[in-house]
Image 1 (cartoon, rainbow, N blue to C red):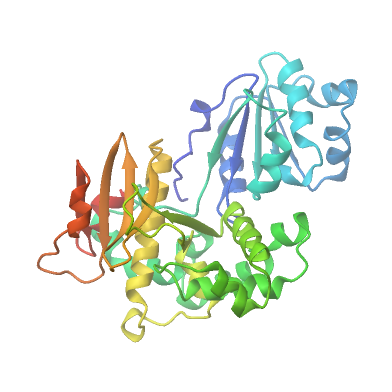
Image 2 (cartoon, rainbow, N blue to C red):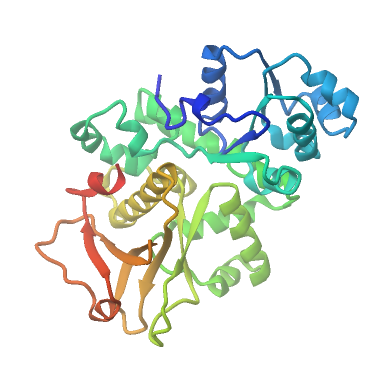
Length: 374
């Protein structure tokens, strides 16, 4: 069984507060919840947001009905909670009215679930995000040598739990294709009433070919033949549903710095490759640099989130071509990282980067990357 960063939910539960677990579909939220419930000594009730009866009760705002539902239990657990209308108010009634009760709710669509729970549960919730397996989590099972041995697979097939446990490359490919066809866009299409899945997939294909590069919304809009506001909205929905991650440009008011564009990375390399149906070996590809940059960037984001390090991420580029792939701002200091698949003898920091006081610069490559993401 794969060990997850949140395997010990006991430490995260607090009485009369809801523990909300977000994350991409098929990232392991239901498994995490079920594994915890198997070993807990709490008397619990587990339901799914797909259950119409549960939907009717928890969306009713009927105090007696909701309190009867939760009576005599130490823990109420709701999987796929985003399916329940007005779920935030239902959970608020439980945490406010049931002394010393614990609540866990999982949901795959942050933009919908957060809108429903945000205001009702203000001050009454703790929030987690469960991503596809991180290198930090896989380090529970493998040593550094074994992780490096599997690097090509991580770059090509990513790290969704079902993909990691699949026995063959063909099985991994089939799982990723199923994710694309059945799960990836489901929340957006159903919950935000987006009508045209083809446009979303075409948008993802354009982003897949531009990983590591600055993206122009005008260019995307022109190629998709839709207006720029729609492109911006779709990008926001894709980020909120854990498909992509936006990284903006860093600036401290140097006139030559580019800040009007952004970079977009895929939360999982396997999804990126499945979108463009490209599962060739690294030796047969011309996008290895982009794959490595996507992998390192998202793994660094996972690491910092799981360690409660709320760093702000940027890229840095000037109009005369100086650039740094990833910039972290933390504790008032700047850290620039150039991500290179190849191992160069020496790379010096861009001269304008050195104008920032206390700004550091480091190369992340295939030899030293584990120190950066573990």
